[in-house]
Image 1 (spheres, rainbow, N blue to C red):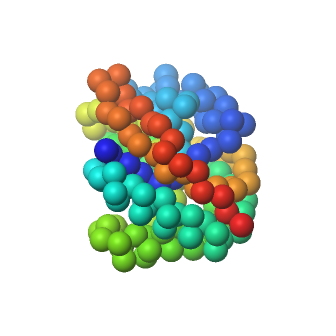
Image 2 (cartoon, rainbow, N blue to C red):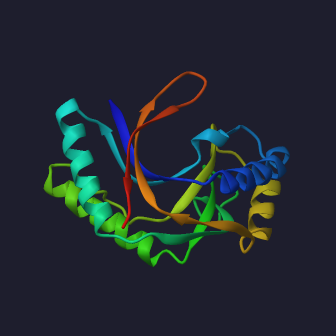
Length: 185
């Protein structure tokens, strides 16, 4: 099964993201906007795993979560990848005050690497993907609006748990199922 580890977002944050996406939709072309129920902050993508690996991952996540306290996650600003280009591939919302988030993600990465899961090659860049461009093309209006909102406060939430998800790819878009939740201290 295809899996990943993430922070599930509060309903209030999801509502704010829906409002933002509804504002941005008319400005972009060929964008697959993330569905409300699929908003999350990915900490580690695992890909295909076996049943036995799933149990080991759950145990590892319990251990890691138990060593971290709950923390506040603040969403601020909009942007895109690649940065500074109007040929947008990904539309995102930024994360600030991420020291505790970075610490949690780093420990998940280290502990899972010990259990045979490859470490991510690129550094962790905390962001929430809200849209993916199907075919990159000039998106001047959208790029301008993202730049205009790059300091916009988009809310905050207390992170009290990490979530282990299964991702099922469907023609209409991915479907996520919670495999387990792991409470922070």
